[in-house]
Structures are given as C-alpha cells and as structure tokens.
Length: 227
Image 1: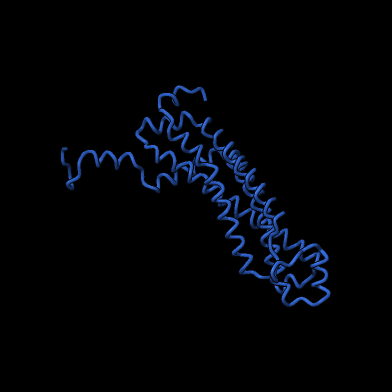
Image 2: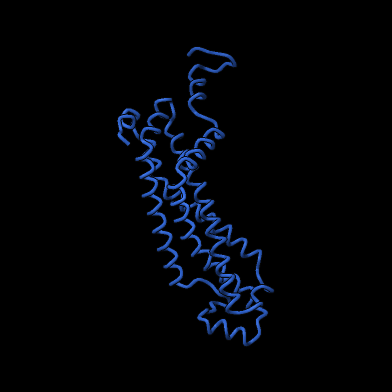
C-alpha cells in the first residue's frame, strides 16, 4: 500500500475523508430537525405528553413524602382521604399507576417509530446522496440518533416541567401552603432529570429500527425514489 505524509496509507486518508467528525454530524442533524420542524414538533410533543404523566405521578409522590413527616393530624387525614395510600411508610406508585405509565410510554414509542419511518421515506434522496458521496452506514445512523436525542431532551424537559408544575398546583389547592413550605426541591429536581432521561431513552428506542432501515438503503434505489 502506498505511503503518504505522516506514514499513513492512502486507505487511511480516504477513511478520514469519509468519516465526518462529530461536530459536522451534530450540525447536519440539527439542520435536519430545523428543516423538518413540524414533524419534529409532533414527535417532541408526543414525548412531552407521555413523560408529563410520569413526571406528574413521580413528583406528586415526592411532594407528599416531603409534606407527610411534618403534617398535623388533620392534614394527614386529608391526604389519606384524597385517595393516597402509604406503602411501607411512604407514598409511591401502585400497580395501577405503573400500568398506566407503561401503556402511555408504549404508545409513545410506537408513535415515534411510525414518525421516524415516515421521515426515512421522505428522505430517500437525501440519504442516497449522502451514501453516494461516501457516507458510511454509521454516519446515517448517527444523524437519526442525534435527532432523536434532540427531540427526546426537549420533549422530556418540557413534559417534566409541565407535569411537575401541574401536580404542584393540584396538591397546593388540595392541601394548602404546607406543600410550599415543605417542598422537596432537590427530590423534585431529580425527578425532572430522571423523566427527561427517560424521554431521551424512549426516543432512542423508537429510532433504532428506522435508523437501521435508512443505513441499509442502497444509494441507487434511494435516488430513483419519487419521494
């Protein structure tokens, strides 16, 4: 194999030209989201709605666990009378809550898969052009994965904040200012972070199959498409 500057082979140099740096992949994936803003917003909104329910439930129990230790007898009676149940001395999700959360997240993932598959169909020519220019399968996968991360983070953050805000207001109306004075800010912030990461994970799970479909596409077939 012919050697070139720095002792590297011609093949090594060609590989470096084909494999774009992460900075370029980030820029291309961000531009793809911006160009297809409406479809991206639909996916982001579905994630936000699913995660908001989870954040609503988790944060609500964290707030109640913060209020309960210093609550007087009448407040405790009001909490229990509202239908909240103690499990081993603390409030937490029951089987019904977990099942509802699972169903909402499952529906969300199915919706993401469907939206991403439609996105692949719309981008046949774009993907074919990338591959004709020498893009590897990993490059195509990276674009879809990074788009999923953007959507998951934004949808998860919006949904988490919305769910936490709603549950805080609901509990404040029900149980008064004790919710404010005993508000477990650190635990609620951790709940927000966990729900956001959950949204990113769901977005990644939903994009795996469409990304593989896009990466395995033959350039000639993609360029002949009418999409």
